[in-house]
Amino acid sequence: MPTQRDTIIVLCTGNICRSPMGERLLQNALAAENAPLNKIKVLSAGIAAWPGDPASPNAVEALAKINIQMKQHASQPLSHALLEKAFLVLGMTPSHLQALEAFPETKPKRAHLFREFIGADADEEIPDPYGQNLEAYRACLDSMAEAIPSILNYLRSEYRC
Image (cartoon, rainbow, N blue to C red; front, top):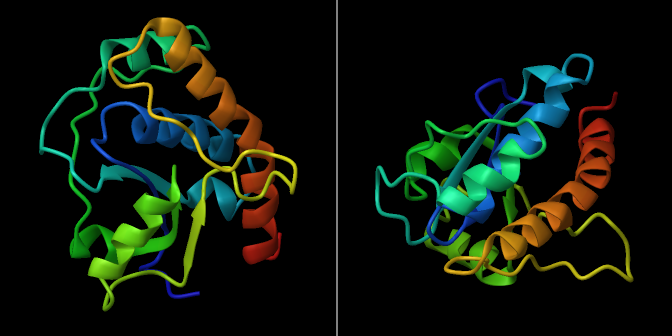
């Protein structure tokens, strides 16, 4: 694997709710793994993100309940520069993965839904909690947390750990 592709991009629409929560969850899980998984960088981006927006207060609060901090998040749009570093892109819905078609020269070989590796009976999409109450954000976070073990298993097989 080329060393420059050492980043996972978690992708959603505005990069203020789902993808920042997914980024922090996955980053936290990878930090507890052995090398080389604990060396993987995790970033988030949005297909329609405005640069520099903070994370949704409900996203920050949902993560704080599980002792993960996200007060310094600044949204960023998906770009060629980000994709050039990407080993893997994890989208929240199929439309996020379809947006990668606008970046054919930098799109990584591995692009999957965040919940894709859970199994056949699981819903693969993570609905957008934007504008909803804290409980919707917690449900979104739980949906992502459920996917973390399957993502780690996928990464172990890809990195041959």
